[in-house]
Image (tube, rainbow, N blue to C red; front, side, top):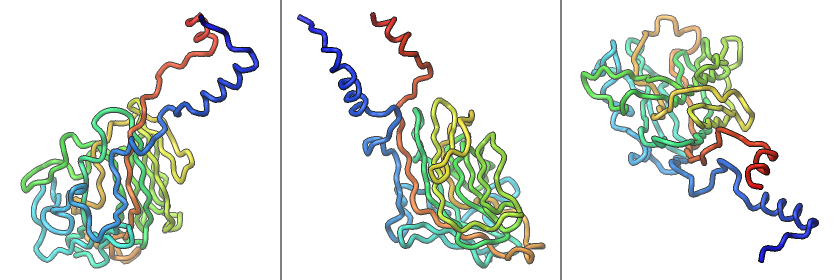
Length: 273
């Protein structure tokens, strides 16, 4: 026998169900796909590709090759639960920077949330930051390969001491925010990228930035620079060195599917009467 609940109990039961039901897309520890808080003394080689971090080939003239033997790559160090990338004494004819990346931090399917906390420590003529990119194939630099060092960016955080102070925050489909008129920013900032239903939404320090915007599905996180470009003929204006920056942590969490069609209460009641 099915008994109807007394009417006074219905609102209370509805409120209880609301409290105990999980929010759509709310992450839990079981949803953690990738995490690194850099709490060791070196980069974790099970999470990051480090073979050419501060040595080996670089992308020059659209091919991966060995740079001049006297070139300075800079440093990628782990200390105080941060990874720091820098090159305070680059070789001017061949200004290089550390490079590490991972092809395994982002799930191949489904919605996800990628978050990282970073800060810039010191300005420089040459800039860099964190890039969340889509590579046409797994990023695997090899001598003689012509695979791009950049890929198609979805999110790029970049700052230099010339044109892109602020820092420059570039979400695909949204103009970059950097400017030469802004001060060089050395504050900690947290960037949260939500990728849902083939669209990206960005939050900075918990505040909405832009989105959802249609973007490629990223499959690679890059820290550092693989390309070797211009010389230092005009760096006197802004410090003849690379920027220095630190990353505190990077996490990637799976998100539950989000409904693409929402129904009104009236539609739902009519369907299940």
